Length: 276
Image (cartoon, rainbow, N blue to C red; front, side):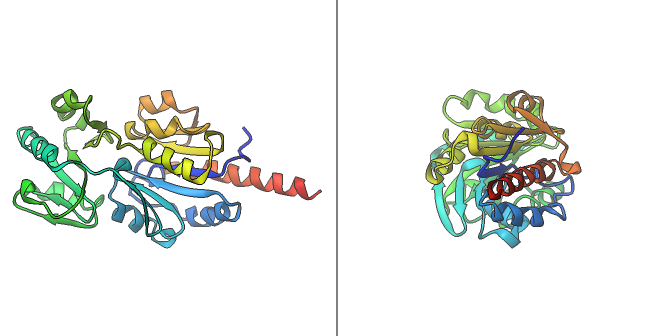
């Protein structure tokens, strides 16, 4: 596998770039410097809130592109590249439905803040790992002074089993994504990481043959299809392993960095050979 033509690296965060403790590995930043040296652009693409992603990658936040909220918003440094807002009337309809589901904890994801009405301390503790800018409110339907990107729903029992059956009828009109063992996202029909990535590839003039993507869950499927070098993590959902062309080590074994080192080596070999 010759990786020397790659110009764009895109990686999911949870279960992919981040380890099980939600941390970036110690050697990621030195690898990032090498990517920059070889003019390879880096995109972090996550279901997480924008503020949460840049908290994790704070040292390089102005040098990367961020696709947040599963493609609801994308920024390069401080420049907003795209946004897919969710109509308020649809949001209210969904909130009323989701309140009827046992073990469904609702997060209303705005551009400025995430909003929760849950009083469950265990949920709020866990949720604050993914959403660093948030407000606790009495009634989500009364929050009006923000632009909304998606509704995220958390189920301690499991999103695929306990939440998805209640909302799958919306799939023709909305983006319904099982984005983790416990998370499910509802958003504008065009909101997915692949839609956002395609816009960015067009803007940068970078082709599928020049793109490398890493993912582990169902919300990564569309963007994996936009790369000739698509990698499923060893710990990935079976659907992801079916779609990805290659597999790498798990997120706890530095699977992303393992491939990025190969990419840098291939770039350096080409650079050396062109000098002779």
